[in-house]
Length: 397
Ligand code: ADP
View 1 (tube, rainbow, N blue to C red):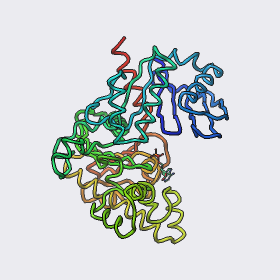
View 2 (tube, protein in one colour; view 1 turned 180 degrees about the vertical axis):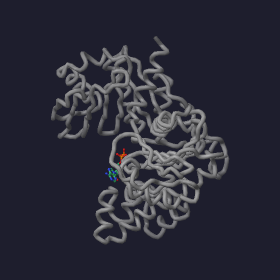
View 3 (spheres, helix red, strand yellow; view 1 turned 60 degrees about the horizontal axis):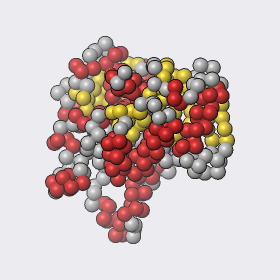
View 4 (tube, rainbow, N blue to C red; view 1 turned 120 degrees about the horizontal axis):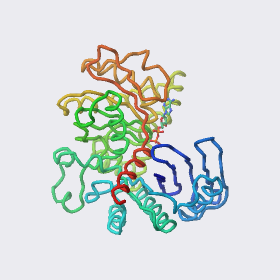
């Protein structure tokens, strides 16, 4: 089956073309709406690149050029030749609680819940509508970051705010990175030769955005991100958990508006807020040079992560495996070492040599004495979206 996976952002479209589970091509439309836009298509079989540098006014024009590059490269005759298109959608809100084929109701609902994730959901919607227009006979599937977390119990997803706020505005924990947590936990089950519905995992997705998820018998029972992707872990530029009373305090004493506070919490905080670097390679480089704020930022990041893993260890009846994924989780040996060292009293014991080995494969890095398996599993959200799309499209054939 030929499946295109689209991740449409406000000024970019990332895409990957699959033939069943094999990647045929990938690419990016960037700087949509600017004068120096660029469209790149990479043939995965021979690494040949096809590219256009020209103004791209909107998502529709972007996808038109992608279609032209597909034809020019001989990779795909036309978008209409696709068997399906899977779209990443960040927020499904309260009603879209499972991945689904796109119809008018789904389009309306994605639009309605865009108040929760305005930048993301509106861009996804533009991507889906463009694909519908360009290839009217192709089935579209919406794959929600929030869907995997719909199994959380009410006492985990409710905030202790007046109940009317939940009833009136659906204010609750939704959780994000669901596609990644689902992918790595099922890959971990495969690697350990276990049934994914018969083992428990704590999955730590550590990238620019970061979240931890407690997974019981294949289902998310709690996760660190909340109503928005701001809650939980300390991230690249996001603060994660805070005492909410700090907000009116800084608003008053720094004279900041709600919008300015929102920017401060999302874009100027996290490890960047502490040491002015948000890439963990730069942070460690700075640590080597004796930058104490860089040391502090890394220690704070690891400590918060340890606290969440400890909390989910308490929540799960038994923890079989701890999974590291995302750019930091997959590559940063120091973060994994610092986190696991603090957790050794829970039976989470790292093999230091295995931890240092560089590899892009899913692998086990615990010592033989560890009660909990520790895995590094490279995430592949696009492959997960392609699989889900194939499954849902096949049901309609
Ligand atoms: P996103 O959340 O944007 O998808 P990624 O999951 O790709 O991001 O993670 C990007 C982050 O991963 C970078 O900002 C950097 O902090 C970290 N990272 C990537 N490679 C390495 C590496 N070799 N060592 C340490 N950290 C790394």
